[in-house]
Amino acid sequence: MNNSEEYAQYRKRRIAMMKKIIIMALVILIILPTVLCIILFIKLNSIQKQLDTVMELRLQQAFSQQVAADGKEQSMDGALYNENVDTQELKDKSDIKHDVSTVEKDEKLYSGKRVYLTFDDGPSENTDAILDKLAEYNAKATFFVVMKTDEQSVERYKRIVSEGHTLAMHSATHVYSQIYSSLDAYISDVSSLQDYLEEVTGKKPVFYRFPGGSSNTVSDVSISECVEYLEQQNIVYFDWNVASGDADRNNVPAYVIASNVINGVETKDDAVVLLHDTNAKSTTVEALDEILQYMADTGMNVLPITEGTIPVHHRISK
Ligand SMILES: [Zn+2]
Image (tube, rainbow, N blue to C red; front, side, top):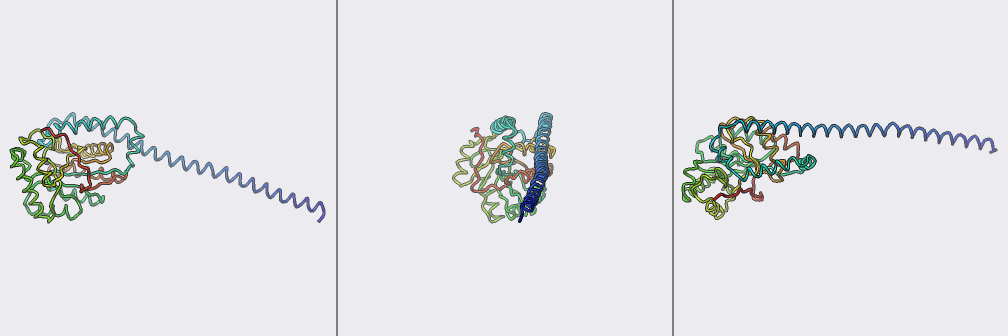
């Protein structure tokens, strides 16, 4: 091979290499900005979504405060719940936390927290609709029930148990003046309901909620003595740390109930939510779609109260 041939080959190789380098540079220059653009676009979208959620919650919160200020008529239950100092204190504290930092809030949104939805005062004509909604979202709840002996109510107790929810005790009569008239009357109310529910479902209920909460001020009996009785019977009582506001009056708009629940659970790792299952509370049923969808979207676990659940207790007033 002579020199000129060698030189020609060297040139060829050099040109080929230059071509390669130019093509690679072009590819990098085109692909890199495209990938960056896609990443930025996805990020922008998710930030926009988070911003929308926050704005919506703020609007709902503002409206619910106005509704609460406007609503002066209150049911007996509602009046009792509003007297509840502990719940009010908890609410105030969580409001402060809520405003400290949206970043902190967003972290909590995706933390897989535990939510215990509890329905008081059932069964009612709305029980089946509540159970249907829970089934649709594969969520489990707890029903603190009263004693009803009609055929439909019996079916509803059974359905609650058979679909994996927790059937818990609230009161046999739910008449405060009777239940809290004496310790004997109290014991007879609780034990008659416990026996009845065991007879109907074959399962002994062990969870309980005081009518009006453990911090109620209407009881003539010392609540501490009632608690002592419950402990002797291995009955665990639960108050709540999130109030849906559905007992404030009838027909509280569904989105107000939903925003109360959503704002409440955001500030707690273990949220016990107070809702009601009565004929008059159809907006509670309507609120379930928004509540359950939100919990599904944010990865919250909607669970029934079981042995391992940490009880939420209010401050007992006497
Ligand atoms: Zn009640």
